Length: 317
Ligand code: ADP
Ligand code: MG
Image: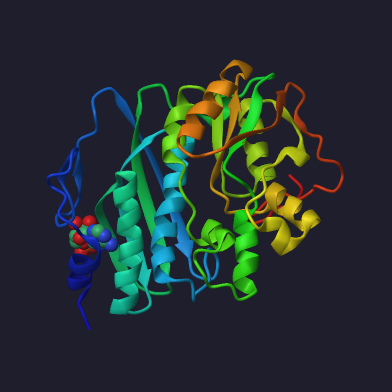
């Protein structure tokens, strides 16, 4: 059985002293990082817990990918460029084959998104992955939740409902990671490149992690505005209607969690440019409504009271 330090050396720590901005990576008491001049650091942490965020039998490669992807999604939502991450892994046992596959998923997404793993922690306990990400954004230019204005167009990247639909596919026994819904659920793509484009064109953004409606409410309350939504315009994930049926598919797009798309408020004059530049990245951008002055979400009818996912649902506040 490998020791904690052997685990770190074999599966996690990679030489990174030659990486730009990394003065010291794994191995000392802290990593030392040198942010670019003129930039602000965007920092966020997300924890993924077995049986809460992913099923215990999910492929380890997907667990590794997903733990990092959901953290990077927050950098995307601020328009930040992803640079560094830390991984605090709590593991029930040192299963080498499992760790090999987990690390492959984690490191592949690191490479693809230009992120360097600069440190972390390994402890024993129920499986849980806590990933801290750090990105950079030109000072004063981060895309905030609070910038939406009445008259803005609301638009969403990619497609919605895949998180809920993929969970349903998993529960029905689908195990093929090429299945589009299962991919959307277990291998979400953080919209980093889109976030950097939208930083220049949008007034406000949030990533859709709790469900469109819940995250739209967050954006609206941060901006002191309301929204008029066209639910029929929501882009549905591939295979969603076939799996859930029309009504549940629309409900999943509106209130299902785990989609990790970006919801943005754009001034009408930048919408075409945003569609063009995201299209060049292979990512659709779909207008789904408008920002209005009157608070509240309008246009969803009485059926849509769903509040989105909450770990600690409170009262009616
Ligand atoms: P300390 O006891 O000082 O907190 P650790 O023994 O936890 O240090 O870690 C030793 C070194 O290995 C540190 O530089 C730490 O950042 C790095 N490290 C630990 N776990 C991981 C991990 N999962 N991924 C990358 N680096 C890690
Ligand atoms: Mg430690």
